[in-house]
Structures are given as C-alpha cells and as structure tokens.
Image (cartoon, rainbow, N blue to C red; front, side):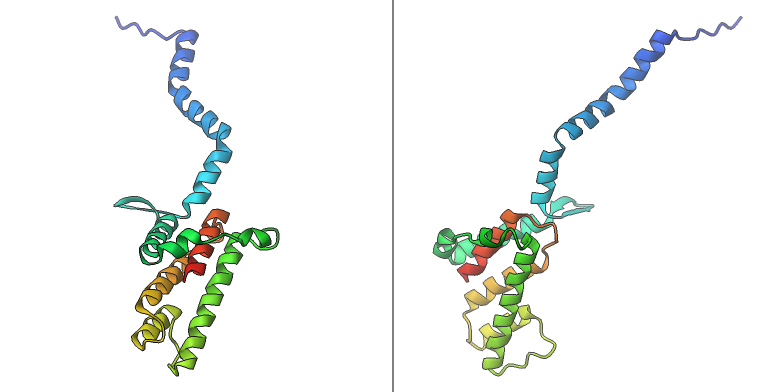
Length: 174
C-alpha cells in the first residue's frame, strides 16, 4: 500500500521562506542603497561586457589618459586647477566636455591651415599626427592631443562632473 504524506501548511511556509529569503534580502539591500549604486554606476562611465569579462571603458580610458599626461607633463597636471564649477548651473558635464572637444578641433584645424596642410576629410586625430610630423607641434603634444581627443570622443551624456573636471585639467595641461 502506497501512502502519500502531504506536508503541513507550516512546512510549506518554511520551504517558501527558504527559497525567497535571499532574493528578497538582495532587493531590500539594493533598494536601501540605490542612491549609492546610482553614483557608482555614473562614476564608472560605460560598461563593456564580453567573453573577457567586464570593463569600465570610459573610466579606464580616462585613467590611461591621465597617466600619459602625468608621465609627459607632471607639473602641468599637478598644478591644474578646476574651474568648470563656474558654469555648472548652465552647462552639463557632457556639454562642457563637448566644448573642450570643439576647442581642440578648432585649434588643430587652424594650425593645419596656417601650416598649409590639406584638412579636407581628415580627422582631428590625424591632423595632430600630421602637425607633429611637420614639426608644427611637438610629438609630445601631438600624442597628448590625440589621447585627449580619443577620450572626449568616447564621452557619453551621463559623464560625471568629476570626469569632466579631470578632462578640463588635462586640456589645460596641453
């Protein structure tokens, strides 16, 4: 004879709690610390997830660019002051970075025209390289400008104020 024993309601409740306790705990923690997590993700920049793992692409690129500037012009980066706060009520950090991008690109195109280089269809990064090759700017400055242009071109609209300020310090160091 086959007897089937049904669990009591109390046992069912205990089993349900065992299954649900960790997901609920995780949701409570995420909800409680949601502002902290939002700040962390904003500071991270963008995430790149692939087979090699997870990478914080913009923040990593920013750190690499800062390191390059520190090796090349340590005194300029160390003395760099941050003055983006003056316009913080008017311009977003992304808009401030785009202003820096435009200033750099305009400077490169002006220098190229003065040096009588053909600018048609050339990117600012390529112009920086050609200006250094023609000794209009130093190879050192060319490399720094190209690194900074690559950095500002990869900026996203959710860039943090701190990241924009660091980019401004790098721009002023050139």
